Image 1 (spheres, rainbow, N blue to C red):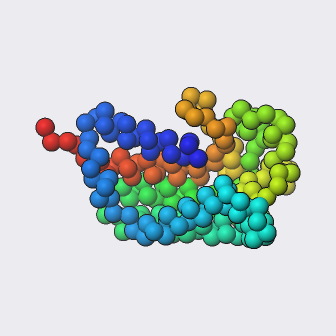
Image 2 (image 1 turned 30 degrees about the vertical axis):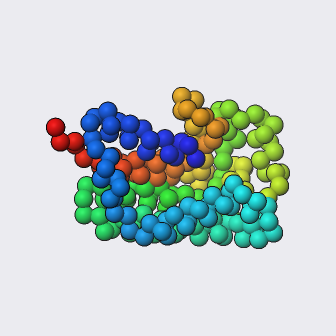
Image 3 (image 1 turned 90 degrees about the vertical axis):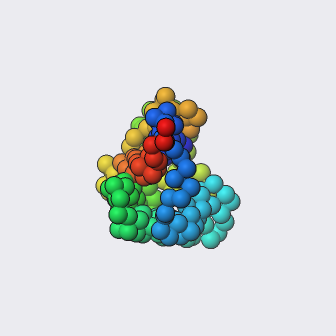
Length: 195
């Protein structure tokens, strides 16, 4: 999760260093933002709370997660559509990233395939990687196997070691596009300060 937010944090630091005002961010028009926030909260609840261990989560977790991803895609695509400024391409990149994630998740029965080698490269112990599939509760990721479809769109990119708060995670190409698109939207919303 931190790797998805770090480009946005980095561009805000760059904006301040380049003497750009962050005030316009408070007025950034985001179409359907409550829907996007609900989708994000749903995904967070499934992956970080006991909801994923509840019988409902075990049975319907994948369907609910795919629904949340589709909702997020709709919000990002809507913003790309209504945006008349230079940030249209940034919204589009973020939407394409979520679309890639949806495609690979749906192709793999509602789970994001994750490379075991990439998890080890990210600093996760081999024992933890081996236990990924056997942990109790619903998981949004599943280990890559020989039957994994569209593996190159799965989680194959280990988070860089230089990131602060390295949380030993693995990202997909879709995650990179999503994070880059959101960061670009934020940077383009900043304005040069008047001298």
